[in-house]
Picture (cartoon, one colour):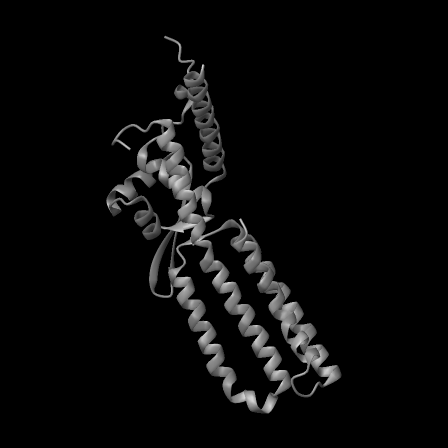
Length: 138
Length: 106
C-alpha cells in the first residue's frame, strides 16, 4: 500500500489479512473457558468424592486457577463479541448449576468417586465448555 | 464533472492505509488494546494515535481507558455508526472488484 492511496484489491486483501489475524486471538478466550471448566469439574468432583483428603489442596488449586486466568487475561489483547456477550450468562449458569450440585450433595451424601459423583461435578463446568465451543467455532 | 463511478462513494475516512486496517481489526473483534492494534498494523504509537483520533472524530471508534491491576490499558471498539460505515465500505469495495472483473472478461 502506498502512503496515500490503496487500490480496491489491496484493500480487500488487507481486510482479509487483518480479520484472520484477529480471529486467531479467540483461542485465549477458549483457553480461559477451558481452565474454568477443568478447575470447576475437578473441584466439585474431588471435594465431593474425597472431602477430607482434598481440603488441604483447595487453596493452592484456587491460586493456580486464578494465576492461569490472570496470565490469560494479560495476554488477551482482543475480545471477541461472542465472548463478551456470553461470559456473564455463562458465569450465572455455572453458579446456578453449582447450587444444584451442592443441593444434590447435601441430599444424597455420595461416597467415593462414583460415576454419579463425576456427573454431578461436571454440572458447573458445562456452561464453560459450551462457552469454549461457541468462541472456538467461527 | 459528475462523480458516478463507485470509487467516489468510498468513505475517505476509512479508505486510507492505516485507518482501513484499524477498522478491519475492530470489526473482527469486539474490542482490542492499543498495543495489539499497533503490532497488528505495524505502525508507531504516535501514528496509530493520530489515525485513531481521525476515526474517533468521525464517530467510528470508541476509546475506553482503564486498568488491569496496576497496568493501564486502552481499549478500542467500533461504534454502531462505525460498523455501519465499514459495512457500506465493504459493499462498495465488492462492487468495484466485481465490476473490474467484468471489465477484464468482457
